[in-house]
Length: 73
Image (tube, rainbow, N blue to C red; front, side, top):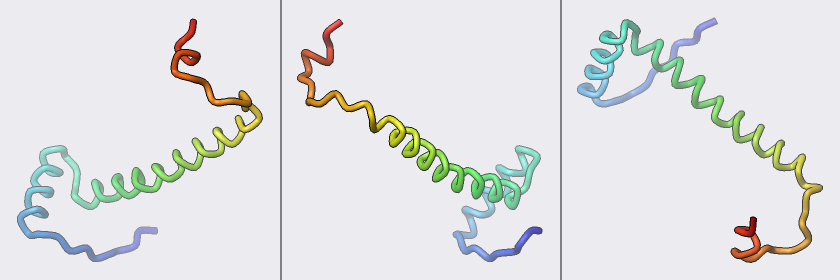
């Protein structure tokens, strides 16, 4: 179910955005829905990354390495 919302922006900005969307064979509403999905998925990616890093908490080297030690091969 789609829900209508009201946003405010500069008239010229809206006009240019509509022109760009039209040139891409889409609408400003469709572009906003895509942006909203990307906006939310960013949080999910950060959350997934944090979960992954937490799963590696067992890997503790026990000390802080020097720059030279980290670059040894």
